[in-house]
Length: 453
Image (cartoon, rainbow, N blue to C red):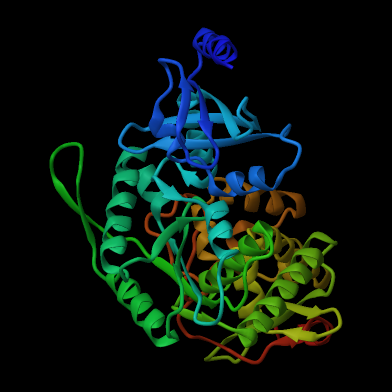
């Protein structure tokens, strides 16, 4: 037995990896090489120990990992039990230092679950944490910080990043303790509230929301301190069940933020709002389809411009009308605002201009000496560098005199400062001594030509 033990000890000493032989029952070290640290076996899993004791045929190997406290060193250990020469059960364990691999693994895990730019957990981590939610009283406080792109363009990306970090630092300091901020998209963030009352969450949301009424002070590259205003869209969503997929979490946040951006105030997202959002998305889809499908359902009605003194018609204003398929007439303010948000307002305005000039020429009104055609355009179109070129092309196509066209500004949006329009005269009111009467359908207008001066 002694010779066998010495041979086994020599075998262990020849191994480069930490290797030891331990009594399974008592934990006594029987053999160990110089590289072996006894502290490793102090963490031998009890579950494996029980399984080894229950086995009759000791041939199975077990792999386990341990990180030694205060050393930050990881070992991957392989243990196998067998009967020793004196019939007791022993465990032969060989260890390998896997610290470098563990660090790389943790780094990969961190990058997978964190936003590198802001050092915040990301949407995937929100999903993982949401899988563990239980009971009621769980909420997503979703918010989107506006105007960052404008600040990046006006100053630079570094200043925009510093401002964003300053804002998030304030939010982190003023949210309730223990609540984590997640960055779900580029400027969309979520704070996860667990086991909270709805009133508690709404108070926290209002505290953050109201802060954005005041400016944020930041130092420019020149050293000058500047006050900058940014806006916020915010919504609160109750989460009553564990998340089933990352896509489900992402969809929930997108729904809340889509509605919050549209309404532009703090919302509590519920079934009623979900229904409204679904209806609005369907409305947007119908509007997009109709505009891109040869202006389906669109027509023009006309409002006479009447000279007060003579009561003669001296012009008309073309008004866009939309019959939404399956629903009926839609207020112009509603579909114009949606067309603006969808980026389709230019197509709509260009169609109105084409159709109005075509009908005016069909009626011969363009030959009238004092005739004026008024077309409304969106204020956001004043920022289009090629607006005058587009309008000029339409006028040239129909050989329509530019002096007989007046552009009015619709009031769905604020008029931008310093619009880059040069050759087109835009007026909010057309002329003095003029008032408007009720709109007239195109076919009725064709029957009333004798009223024009």
